[in-house]
Amino acid sequence: MWIWLGSSLFLLCLIIVLLLLSHIKLQFFAKKSNKNDIVTVDVTLLFGLISLHYKIPEIELKNLQDGLIIRGENSNNLNEGQTANHEQAINKHKIEQWADDFREMLKATLGLRSWMKATLKHIKVAQLEWSTNIALSNAAHTATLTGFAWALKSTLIGFLSYHISLQQRPKLFVVPKFGIPPLFVSQLKCTARIRLGYAFYASFVLVFRVLRENKGLRKWFKLLSKAKSAKSSDR
Image (tube, rainbow, N blue to C red; front, side, top):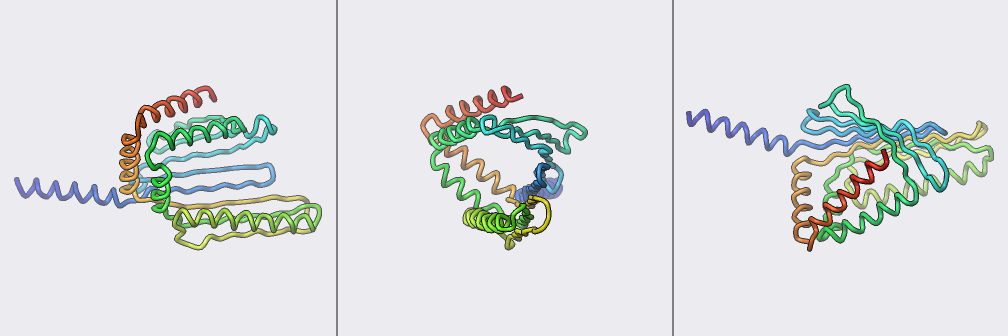
């Protein structure tokens, strides 16, 4: 009996260790081809036992005041055949609201910035490919926009590499097209992962930092309630 019990405990501990050493894998894909847009996000964990899929098939720019209208759908393998659709507006008011919420998070959490930096350092990017094809009616304007695109990509990738770990050199392409109708096609592929065990650890550290801050837990509940109300009003 003791041998059977010991073997069961050993097997259970081995399974837990293997699960903690497994990765949360995120795959991001975005493509813009003139007025056609598509964004997909796939998250898998526990060796693929759980998978989440998020898709944005349409991004509509209304005007400068109304901003962007994003229509998306999400699904998972736990509720197969069930897809949730939603629509969200991103405008100046929404961005200001997010900025205010982030400032409230900083006040509600002890050392939130340092926690974010430490957590981001454990994210490993295994693949990052970003290609762009550009064509304008004027060749000089095409060349200028190509240079601007290179500068923008280099700046963003440099900022990204400072905060997270890039396991492979990013593949960046900007291809100018001459003598054809105006064209803009940009495609981004990214694969990143973080160990499940560290994700649990980072979550515990975050909760501990919130509890150490004066009225931190109450402030977080207030923020979550506010976000839930805003989400309900967007529907």
